Image 1: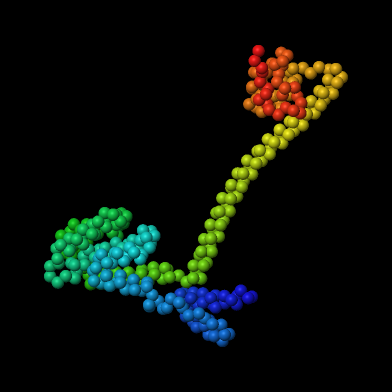
Image 2: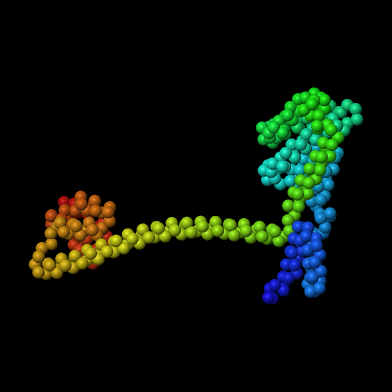
Length: 315
């Protein structure tokens, strides 16, 4: 309870911020009134109103560049403040950007008094052509935009029937309205309330944690299989050693009774005791039928520890 009271003001501020963002005006008024009645102080917004925020200033600058036909200023702001993921991945943004390039390409033809400056017009047309050949090429297969790829090559586009709509008085205001709505949506999304951010980050954090736990589980299972194989091998070697030991005890008891141990039996014991690699070596290098050719390890006893001693003596 103490922790809640310590952070109560901040929590109430998160709720207030979200209600304000989602435009629950009546709910926000009721919430604020009830907090006041209960003596729960609501923190003041640290960011100030949206009208004084940086996003609105950027929107105003973009719209001002649109109205004045300042192509470079507009697209510098566009690329700086519109996320690349939106510009490259959102179909609405791509279509809007295409029409914005048309707007600036024909701006002088629509707003110049008399004959437009040829050098500046050529520069705008060249800029538009570069766009069509690069980023704008993605829309070349779209029926809606296909006719506009001929725009830079038409001497008098205002007189061409395919571009008649572009030169109507209503076309630019309608495009500006679309731009305003798009910017409002984009900058609203970039100023999400902290409550939403916390929710989103928590979900992503849980997802990352699950992925990490899954990787750890896969690695643990891999190690477990490796250790299980080692355990099974050790267990098999242990049972083999117990069996050989029991046989050797029986053989020692038999020698006390005067029974002889055959060389073949000793060879089989060595083969069973040593590794697979030593089996081949023993089979070819040790002759149990010749006296004096067997190293001490073949004379089974507790002092034997190095299988490499089981090589034959020369001569």
